[in-house]
Image 1 (cartoon, chains in turn red, cyan):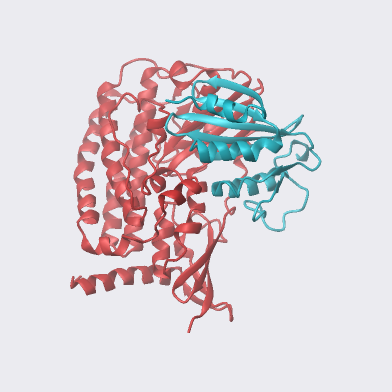
Image 2: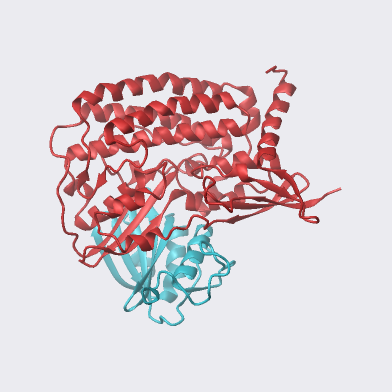
Length: 400
Length: 144
């Protein structure tokens, strides 16, 4: 007998990590529809920005997200430098290299963070612990270069604030050398494990057409065969001066999204190594004071996809309008198609697959529509997801 | 690489008001509000551009909306600009039925700037709470 329930996945309390609210309409085991409700973390940053001096705004937009806290200020300074005549014409070369290195270090730590969470949701807690263990040395690098583990405070209109010291370079190189075996391990753990194949393949599929229709970006789009990457398409920093590849997969399922992120780890390591070798000596700041009237657009490839900033200046010392679009804004909306038709046990990992900063699935609750009584809570849903993995293992005769 | 601007000029020459090329990869093309759906459809479907987002701006002349598109193969960012002069009750046709990804941003501009998107499938609050007072729009300059 089919039994219709509504499953609310969601926040209500700003102290919990990343409030988003998903209301799943469920018929038996199948998800038939999904309402996505956001706005719990609306802090009015676009409006706040209009009350800040141009040079204060990077610190404000950095606080949009603690994970991609290099992407937002970077996109903002690119927008301002667009008004001034383009990044390459304004910023000293050494600063371009430093910006690129910090941007890629950020991608590495963000992808490892996602990998750990994804492992946890399907019951691979060892992957979770290992991924975060290898993320830790990267945060130490940030502390060494910028003084902060998060919110690096390195972007500045016309340059960067902190230089990379010569004596720090061996430590960065060693961290990159140490990361490659770890990436190999994750690649093996995901790509060679029949259980993960069975668990993630064909789950949460976003087709190429859907990815285009919903305007998705970043690994979410690339896993569905959409070959886009701002770093290559509209190069900033020194991405056009180093050799690297855009990773594209065709399947569009959770497995493909994991593969894209794991393979991107290697590309980021390669970019950082080349930047360290090629980085010239010289100034790191163009010392820009006044911003002329005009309008500028800056966009960068954040770990989750394109991060977009539009700034209009009227010649005073504050922006008249500052529009920000983070990558999750479009990627989360695409869950409307990716999660529908799945079973409840696949929902957590499907919603997590777009990497909506932190996944909010541990605040899931299943409500019975008739009695309004809570049937399952968030931990139960993660347990459901983990139990499905166990079942697959048993079916394959793998003992754990 | 085919030049996207000449494509747009050829197809939509009667409705274009102004074309500005600010820096090589940044193009701003101004249209009348009623021509926006046609222009957006051409840029999105025929030219294969990806919609990034839209920016709504409260200016002294009216509510200005910029629809930002990215032509990823060339790295160009094309912004379709339009000005709605009626600030009392600004209205424009929705493009959400053409581009699914425009649904959220139209809801956002509706609540923050009070622009009514005609034909939007689901025009309700996105970022603000559901019982936000009617007629108060946080990004309107006269509302501060």
